[in-house]
Length: 392
Ligand SMILES: Cc1cc2nc3c(=O)[nH]c(=O)nc-3n(C[C@H](O)[C@H](O)[C@H](O)COP(=O)(O)OP(=O)(O)OC[C@H]3O[C@@H](n4cnc5c(N)ncnc54)[C@H](O)[C@@H]3O)c2cc1C
Image (tube, rainbow, N blue to C red; front, side, top):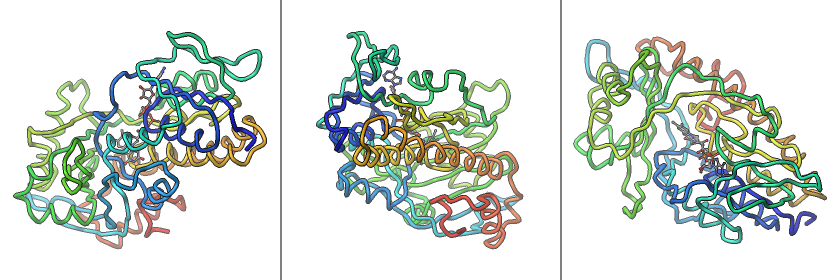
C-alpha cells in the first residue's frame, strides 16, 4: 500500500467524517479527526434510510456493528386522504427495500469503528490551506498540523470547500421539510396503520407536497424492537410564518387521513425540526491534497434519501482508491473521477423528485397503481434510485 503511513486530517466527525476516518485507517493512513462539537452527536437523532446491500457491505467491511438495530422493510405504500372525508385511500404499492436507521445509532456505530484514528472533540478547525512544502495545513486553537490529505467532512457550510470552490452557494428549493419522531407506543391505538408501518414505508400525497412515515429503532437504551415513528413532511411554508410546528400540524390536519394527522398533532415529539431544502454540488470532489465528503461535497434534496448514503459510499470509494493507488494524490484523483459525477447525478435526481412531489404535485386523488408506476418512471427518466427499484 503506497499510502501506508500517510497523514490524513479529517475536518468534521459526523457521519461522513467518521466513515472517512474508518476508510483511512483501513487503508493504512494515520488519521486525525477534528470535530467542532464537544458533546456526543447522538441527539441529532431522527431517521436515516440506506439501501440494504450498502448496510450489509458496511457491516461486512467493519464500518458498522452488525448489532446496530435497524428496521428494514421491503415495500412502499402510497396513500392519500379521500376527498371530503378523513379516511385514507391506498392507491399504489411498490417494491422498495430500505434499511431505516436511527441517526444517533448510526453515528455511534461509525464512531466506535474509528478506533485507530485520533478523534478530537471540541476542536473547531479555523482554516485549511495548501502547505508550500507540499500537502496541507490545518489550523485549530491548538496550533497548526501538516497532512498529506485533508478530508472536508464538515457539512453543508464546509470551510474546507472554500479552498476548492470559494464562490459556491446552495440554491434554495423554495420549500421546507419538517421532520419529527414519536414513540410508536404512543400511537398504539391505531393498530392497522401501525401494522402497515411494520411492513412498509408510507407516502401520503396532498396538494403542494407529501409526507413520508417509517419506523426506526428507538435507541437511547431502549430494546432493539422498540420503535420510533419517524416522519418528514414537504411543503412550502407561508411567507413570514414563525410558528413552524403550528404550521405543519395545521397542514397535517387539513390534508392527512385522521390517524396520520394525529401523529403530527401529538405534543410528545422527541424531535421536531424544520430544514430549508436546497441543492449544492461541488464541481470537483477532490483536488489533491483536499477531498470533500458527504454534505461538504454536495447536498441533494432529501427525497433521494441519499445524503448519508453518499457519505458512506464516499468512504468506501476512498478506501479502495487509497489501497490501489501509488500515491495519495493519485488516490484523490481516482476519488474525484468517481464521486464528482455521482454527486451531480443525485442533485439532479433530487430536483426531479422535488418537482414531481412538491412543486408540481399530481392530482393524488386520481392516481392508481398504473399511473403511479408510469409517473415514477417519467420522473426518474432513466436515473437509478434504490427507493424506486421497480421502475427500472
Ligand atoms: C429531512 C432529511 C432527511 C434525510 N434523510 C436521509 C435519508 O433517509 N438517507 C440519507 O442517506 N440521508 C438523508 N438525509 C441527509 C443526511 O442527513 C446528511 O446528508 C448527512 O447526515 C450529512 O452528514 P455529514 O457528515 O456530511 O454532515 P454533518 O452531519 O452536517 O456533519 C458535519 C460535521 O462537521 C462538523 N464541523 C463543521 N465545521 C467544522 C469545523 N470548522 N471544524 C470542525 N468540525 C466542523 C460539524 O460539527 C458536524 O459534526 C436527510 C436529510 C434531511 C434534512
